[in-house]
Image 1 (spheres, rainbow, N blue to C red):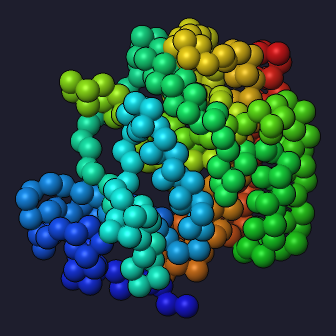
Image 2 (tube, rainbow, N blue to C red; image 1 turned 180 degrees about the vertical axis):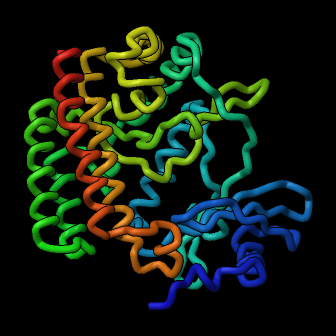
Length: 326
């Protein structure tokens, strides 16, 4: 199958977008930096700036993308500051152009927030608590479930035919995964308590709009999981090393939903799962034309030795954080 993104040009997609948006567009399209998807700023003839996101084929099903869109609209309807996609001419929020699914969003400008103070983190905690009140209403059936045993099993399966330099390296990877699962699995709550999450809520995904306050962006990695996943990435360090900041974000969150600070025990387990998921995510891109220049050395002996060393360092950190909070 040809790499369809190579042929995705404004000259081809702008006329199609005019039809589904029912408006005239300027011949302007500025590409944003995005490795996975293709994202462009476009403008209507009236001067409104829009963002069109073309989703990488094979990554998400249509149902999974609509899970994200539905969550965004539920949040928007509940007064949560998010950026939901526009409804297109056919009544859906998800369009298709030459086999590539896409969505169109209003462009929202803002600046990154450092979250350097407990006051800023408490404000973020309040916003995330409100977000999770909506997320707890139901699950997203076609999105990833952040449950360690299932997730690690899927990661091993995805990497089984990857470029390990020999069977020994793959077996070593399996042993590491099993050791990580043995630590993490007993600590996780039941998946029956999971809710819809942002999933990748680091500082760059919460913008500060002067006069409007905080706004949440980029729900591309939305998933089902424990609430702490949307909290720990905002902290300046491992939770046990920044207890004042951890307490502040939990205090804000607790104004809207209950959160036990002991759940920060999962933070290093979640960091390790994030590292594993990234390994499998990178492997899934290895047939892309520009993969080798983006990930030089991927799959070599040196690559895997470095990755294994990083994962081994996480094992005592996971145990230490669990002991601290439990």
